[in-house]
Image 1: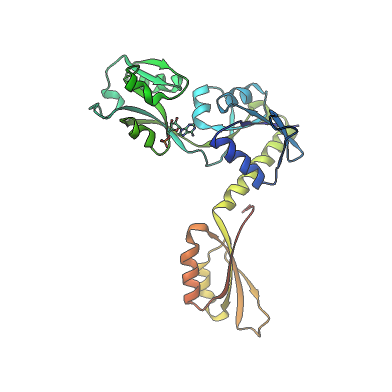
Image 2: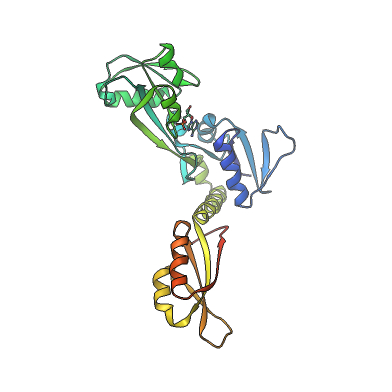
Length: 287
Ligand code: AMP
């Protein structure tokens, strides 16, 4: 039985649950406040703090986990990354007050007080740039600390940058960029049966993620414009062309198209005389 540690709250938790749902792996809770649930009938989901997931996966308390790259790096624990899930984007940045003239960490004075919930990555980043920082360990809301006079700079997660701006701070340097990863216990991969289950889960999730950016497009087109259709609808191996029972003049062209290209592809098809254009979502895509 594979145990998967999932974040118990926040954006990462919502996105991870939605991903499993789209993959046909439903969570079945026995009670509202349950800390674990059956997942897709075959697996067990454990709900824990995102910060603790690298630890649990490294120790083998969970076989797999979903958490942010930032938290994995901060933990310093060895886990096997299986898949970048793409959601939960943020960056870990050094920020100073707007009026600070420094243009990089290298220009900051030694011994500066830096408030952060990421002491390990902060200490390493300053050290690599030839600087020492006095780390002020906090458990949240770093942005307020320069205003309170508790710190001279902060290292915190930035998504849109609006929290920094609101608090009169500006980004000086980026320590790392982060998205959510599917990770595995390193020993798990040596057990063939469990490794197979883990690879299956990774492949399933990957097929759902890949499908999100694609659409399946179908259109009836005149047979004589097929050379142009091939250019407009590259598809995976080229478009699929199917006969339409109209005596031969019209064929149906089917292809997988990038979501962002759909509107201009439709316009080009129409210009070539296409009719009956249909666009649908794809649940899974395994090229
Ligand atoms: P923003 O104002 O959009 O730049 O968001 C910054 C605030 O959201 C900070 O308080 C961060 O600590 C928090 N934040 C942003 N992204 C994440 C994330 N992926 N995980 C946890 N906290 C985050």
